[in-house]
Image (cartoon, rainbow, N blue to C red; front, side, top):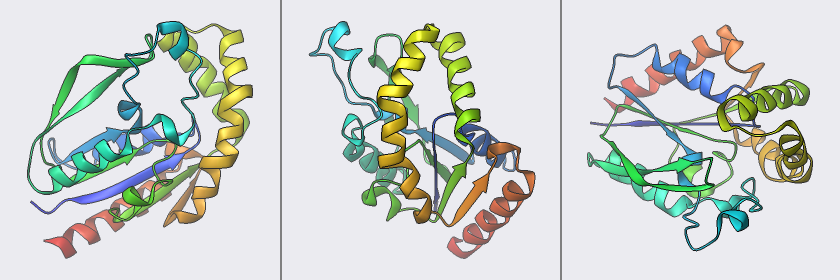
Length: 207
């Protein structure tokens, strides 16, 4: 199996997951797999829960990229991998892992998917989802309250202290690494259709 690797980056709440899901819908079950950078937050078991709660998870150093690169290479070689499962409630990896088998299309998704050269060097298509900051903040606020049990004040504090400054330092500059910049996230149907056409062209070349 010859895999195509797609990177999808963009700020928090930009619509990266929606883009990934819309791409996956264009293919049969088992053809597309999504690797979320959030799964590769470092194992912080040696820290207390209180210590983990103040870690800057929006900094590149918080991610174990070497492990992700190893897993992507293994999948491209036809091997099965066990990827970490991250628990946002405890700010740490779960003891369980998720078994992932090789797929034709591998999507690497995360705010810093285009930051690490070890990753971008492997990518066939690089995408950046560019959504206005106010829309992104509202989406993050709703997600963190509903899905992660956070308070409004804690979300605002984290956004102000780490999310926003790290975005401008490590995330937004990477839009110029992208082959395609997608305005307005997954709701941009024209962009999604163009991306699908590009992916099919690359798949044809590889086959």
